[in-house]
Image (cartoon, rainbow, N blue to C red; front, side, top):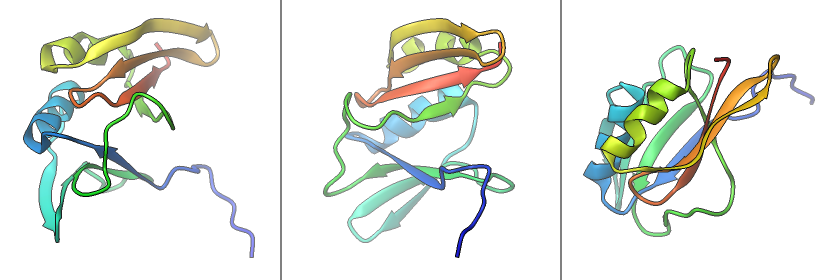
Length: 126
């Protein structure tokens, strides 16, 4: 059976060392509320997912280690990703590539390290 989809990302998990610090970081830069839950030995901080095609979580538990290398997830930067980047450093992160134009049709991107040392990207039209 073949299924056609417009979105190939389903769920993402962002590892953390200090769970509460990671939640504060993402709540601060994305201006959202993250819901913490416990699953056995793992803490999960759920991103808001109602009406979203993709869900994500901050994860803290055995087998989850933050990393600068590996798969790179790009977060939605809204209309202008600079607004999000402006909050990265004040919330304990580091900009690794500033706002950069891809081209007029595809907008801008940037990369940063979060408060836990994970490398992530951000994308926006402006």
